[in-house]
Length: 83
Image (cartoon, rainbow, N blue to C red):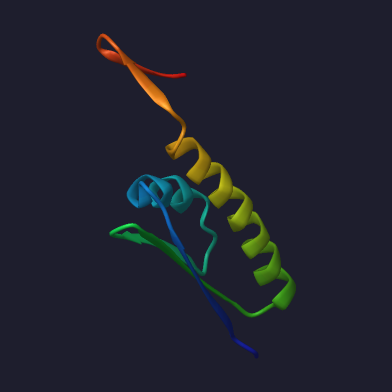
C-alpha cells in the first residue's frame, strides 16, 4: 500500500491560537503544532483523494483561524470586543 505524507508550514501573528483552533478538526493521520510564529501540520494517508480532501479542508480552516485571530479588537472596560 502506498503511503502519502505532506507538511504544511505557515507563519502567523498568533501561531498558538491558530494551531489550537485547527487541532480539534484534525483527522486521523494529521498533527498540528505551533512553534514560535509558525504552525506546522503533518498529514499522512494511503489514498490520494482523501489526502487532497484533507488538505483542502485544512486550508479553508486555516484561513478562517488566521482571520479570526487577527481581527482588530478594542478594549472596553473588562471586555474585549471586535471593532
